[in-house]
Image (cartoon, rainbow, N blue to C red):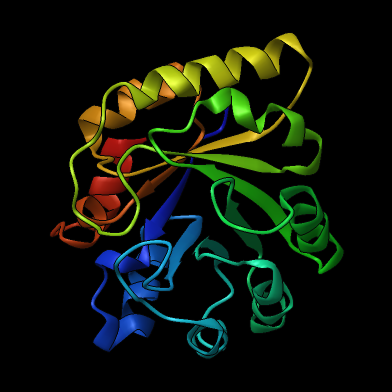
Length: 214
């Protein structure tokens, strides 16, 4: 399965985000992972649809937007208008998950569903027909630079095995503590979209770091 990398904007130099996105382009990284946090669903607060719209004018890289918010429903059209290509919501957030996933697609974006480390991955099964991707968090959401939680790789394997047995072709993304060592673990488990932040943006040579992850 083809592996895609999604560079986490959370670890970038936000004062020079256009240059940081160009670094990603030059390094052959396919996606930019944009973590939107509301200070309620998680403690941290990051940025909103206006920032996404601003950086959309600077690059045509695939915008992989991850909503870590309490109520994603009203935000779906805002991020579609801003230029997000993929919108991922949390199973643990409020609102009607099925209707929200449908709305994401109706607004012209790919749909993703995320689960925290403590949520059984089996809980996403009823929603898989509405998903283009499932994000298995490999750290507790809310902060960058955390260490990888090993048992989350088991959740990836359970999900990939379920998809294979049921003829479901779908991206499985992992986010949290991904580097050249942990990448091998999650790829073997069946993940094919890897979010990396600190490992990529703090590297002297981002292209080399990306190749080591691949």
